[in-house]
Image (cartoon, rainbow, N blue to C red; front, side, top):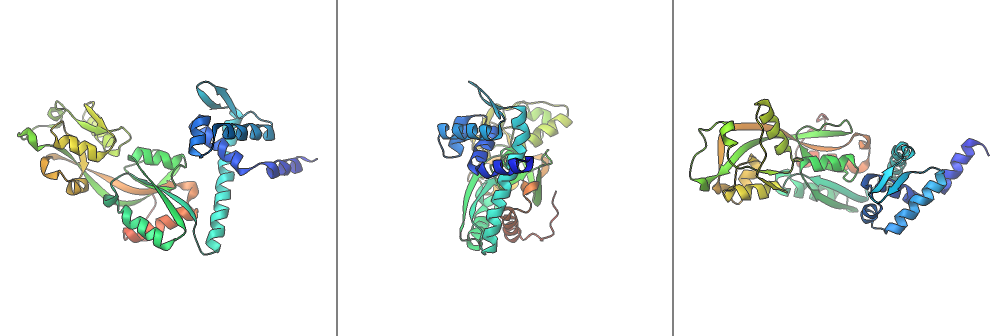
Length: 312
């Protein structure tokens, strides 16, 4: 049998579910976590990996009590497997388009409260335009959203500020103003203090993946200052609640302050205002994916953006 025929025979026998298991284990580094993400069982996923290794006559993972680590061959084949899975998904989606409908599940990352990024309007637009499409929303900081896009756990998503990877692109939506807030219950004005003096007070911050956290540490670095927050929380609303309780200072977007139920308990320090761009992003290699293109069209309608909005 010629080499080309052998390769064709292998592709005939190889199953997509084996490739999905391979890619998911490669991302998660664990059979158990991969099985959970795939809604399968650990023995089934393990069997898929074993069958694929037998099919390819290549060892894909090194197995240890700590988890699954890709071999050199596994690393080389990971991208190839991703390419095959993406092609199969595009084939199905293209067929749906030809039938005049878009199916599947759009996984949407949200880095802010629904109202501040017009998520209800976006979902309503997509649901009306594509009645057979389902949706899964994931809330997280901007860093979590970009990582979800890179890892293909998300199809599209909102994030603020720059990103440091060439794998993603983002359509700029709007400029958001970030300010420093402190508690009104302190009954004293901090307006005459400089930034270094503010750092002597306790601070509340979201995790380092948050765009506000990154912005603030960049500003401190430029001023030759360092600081570690006393309180860390999992989202911006929790941070503002702690500020309102008098536990410390924090950063907030002005549109968050307007909507926050305890806004009257917060004061804005007048000497700090920085701009962060809100983006709607996705992986560059998915630019022709119908899920992505339809989401972009909906975002343009909801935010009244020109169709020629540049990609950055």
